[in-house]
Picture 1: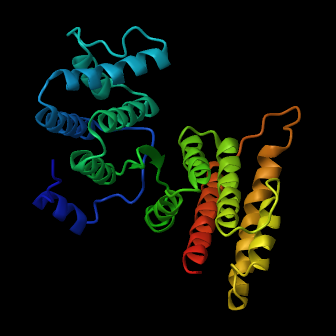
Picture 2 (picture 1 turned 30 degrees about the vertical axis):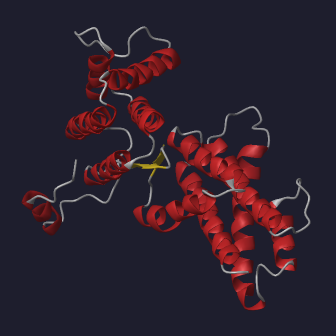
Length: 300
């Protein structure tokens, strides 16, 4: 289902009425209705490809069954009709918990992918839904089948997404999982866990590069030691010294946040990590991964 750039949308942009500030705690009803239309069209394409209607039923049942099980509920909504399709439709329209609504979106993508493969229809669905998120200034996007939180449009498009794409290759699976997990923790406001996973993803990226190039290192090496290993093996050329210093400072900053806010005991009082600091740490980690990727890719 293509996204049409209507006259009214263009006029809103000209009048400066399009918000650059994202919201995370509300999914507006127009976006929910658009999502339902898109799901119907997506599953319609699956039905056309596979013919038997039972495939669509299996997808609805799989999504609803998973949500019932994980939430510990016999039903996830109060739909009048007693079938999974209407139960899911009612859930998408009425569920107030944003995280749970995003759970359903992830499961729809995962199950359609399982039954039909990652075909053009699913790619179009994900692309259009990401556009709809932006149109409604809802700060989420689907990347590699996962919903991640978008705090800076520029950082997300220019740093975070390219970093995930680089990690989507053999040998970097662990780093990618940690990277995505960091943003998943962040989406659920698990701030300390998000910082830990972000730093681990950068460390794992350097370990993967060292492994790919047969450089000697210890699996227990910290980020600082791994930077030394990369430097000693000329991953960082001499004229890149300033960039190396910046990267070292970058890593020290992230590790310092982790050590001070997360890795040590809290004492008698529960300490909360500020969300802005977490976002800063995640962006630093993404920038580090992207820098390492560029250096690795540009050397023979």
